[in-house]
Image (cartoon, rainbow over all chains, first blue to last red; front, side, top):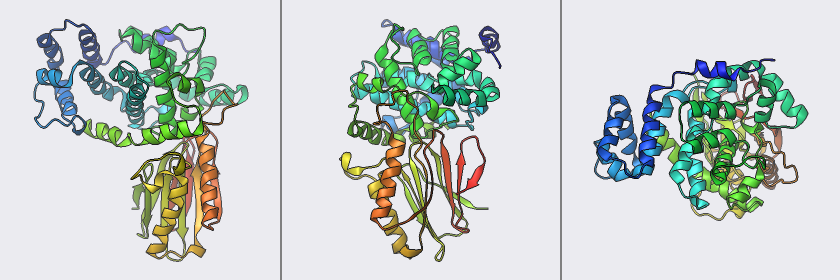
Length: 290
Length: 163
């Protein structure tokens, strides 16, 4: 059995991908009501390739501006802080997520597609359930599987043992990961998020996206955790970058009720039918990032 | 070199073009329905997402999205292209189930409901299902080779096998 030495592992991922620094800094600045737009555009504009990608995304069809956004300043004033913040995270996560994640049997592009799908679905669930900040839900959905980037090598080694435990003990894949390795991908993700100074609320959705209704946990934002949990499960059910673990994660039915979805076949099928219609938006986002 | 055509969610594709391989990639709870007429070498595939269009009232949707609308639609397309209804070989794959600890609730068992609904729609049209690889909790990719008429399934992390 490979027991994961979490500290050793975190030391190995010491080098935060450069762009994440920008995203976190920007996210923090945007959370501050007194943010100085000039200063903000200076922080964003410091990395040229980042700026180019961000502007390309801002100009993509789904935002439908007739006049092109050409400067960071322009993007801030026309898209608004919240949208800009979620797009900044899309740009920075691509380089980390858009690669093969062997341990979970995800070919290049699959985790990226899965993460974008989870982001779009989370935002949609936030909107229909009256959650206060759908853009935050987007970012939380986008980043929830960041731990997979780090522990997939260990999963590769122990995959058969984990699956055997799922079947013999009737537990979800995440719990089986924890039993075999000592940590699951959500806990590792949260440790990384903390190390990289992600906002606390994102650390929480990363940590509990497979464990949304545990009575022993005091959640900062339980609704958001429930939203990301459902978005994650439906992205998996629909095969959006499924991997070898996707459908073995426990789906907590209470999460549906908690965000106001009717827990009966009509309620669920209507929800899935509506979410499938978002797939063109997912394809468009991905196309605009290629 | 064969020409792979990916059939996305809710899509139906029918072709007689030799060298074409129809692929329903990454099926979770969705069902890939593949039909082939070995005489005319006409084949079709649908990527079905949900069991029942009646429950979800929406206009202007793709027929391929629901089992009850996808089956008659693919059949209609194949017959209009010249396929012989009596010769059709029908196979399905997919319908996996998301794991849940709350066994009492079957409402999320979309994969199973899809499988039942596709089978019912096929028998309503008088079509015999020759083979099915459904259920479980792993994703699948399903292929139909128009030239050879061979059907194959690949479970994630495993080798492709003939169905």
